[in-house]
Image (tube, rainbow over all chains, first blue to last red; front, side, top):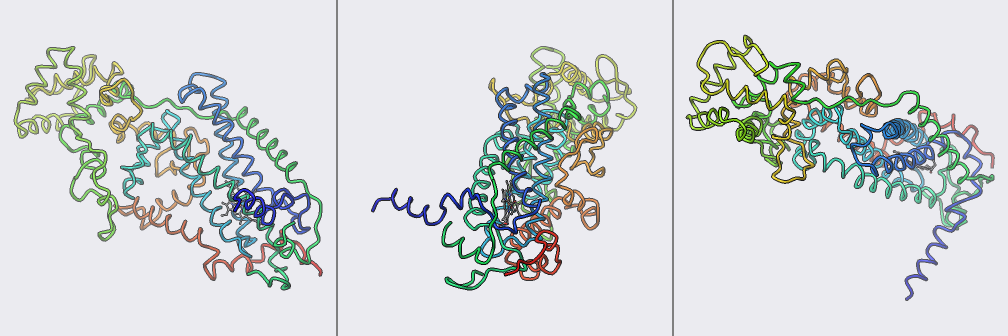
Length: 206
Length: 309
Ligand code: HEM
């Protein structure tokens, strides 16, 4: 058996180019709420790009450089845009019950994305090396310690928090975003609640 | 199109769309908006609080911090896990106490970590301080505690001068010399480094130095910046910049009973939020919850008219 060939065939059957990058979408995809997901994705890209600039010069650069401070500001405000878009996306998907017709795992990964974005932002605040980081570290440690995780995920350990913020968590987010979008493309866009799938060959999907 | 999608879209008319163009436009708009916000509002960067600043601006707080650490009465000395085994300190709800189960992962001996060890590093430069430290460490614990207790008692009447702390007349053993040494170390800016010493050139973990000022000193610095917990500080940045706004629910819980009155508030809030997160995660599987969208009818604002077949 040729694995490569099998992969080719599976992809051709399950996720052909016309599904991965469709030039045609159902007519019901006709609302601004469909832009929230794309806006979240775009914010993530801008976050990674501005983050890479900040990281390239080291964690102390932006305190002493005007350009560094500007990139920090860009990163800081893009976080607000990212969460704003993501929360709108979340509630839009909720009120569209977009988990229907087999899309429950797309929803689950979406919620995971939200839940993992929170510590990503937290470790970002902790990586600033200023009063804000210091204050969030000493305040937040009590919450971590009460839940028994403070000894393993130590908000006061800069090296650990920085690693989580610039590598581990963004990597996890990036992978999950990729999976999320692939699943959206694989399923196609969910049908309106008032217009469920029609039974026919292959049966009605639940 | 795959057979699967063709079947799913049965009865739906398709219209042209350009996802890549949309993505690029989204990038341009988000980047543009971010650049404008960054240019107009910049971002906060309040310098970290240092023992040096506290020694100069609030010497009584630093003296109190040092003495309480020596007395074993500081918040950290009495914290419980992960720093030490103080009995009864861990948060717990009816015997459910993950803090206790996790155990001591970052052992901290408060008198040593915050006072005695940093002083010992400085003692090499000061024969007086060296003698005082030797006297203190040679004394029995009971006598040490008598000195520390006496000093803590008169601390509100202490004066502060260039040398350090001037306590009212009394017997504090070697403490006055030690306190002076401590203030000099703090004012020189070397106290944090002396606390953090890792025995190596390299250092990326600032746990102990951060814990030194974690009580009164940091709260006093946070108040004018509106960052106290009671000021909803968790979702704020210095100077009223927006912070972790998405933590609004988490922050709100701390403000209301039973959370606001519980001595295990952190555990209680943490468990509540974990439970709510789990529910959100599992919405598609929970009858009743997953029917809210259909019943609410809000979807009709998005999908205007049911498609004619
Ligand atoms: C980093 C965060 C996220 C990114 C980048 C992202 C991205 C996207 C994109 C681009 C789409 C397709 C276009 C659209 O319908 O808007 C989508 C669809 C979807 N998203 Fe997200 N998303 C994120 C988080 C979430 C969250 C938090 C949820 C819900 C809890 C969620 C649930 C869904 C669902 C159910 C769909 C399928 C919609 C359909 O079939 O019509 N996503 N996501």
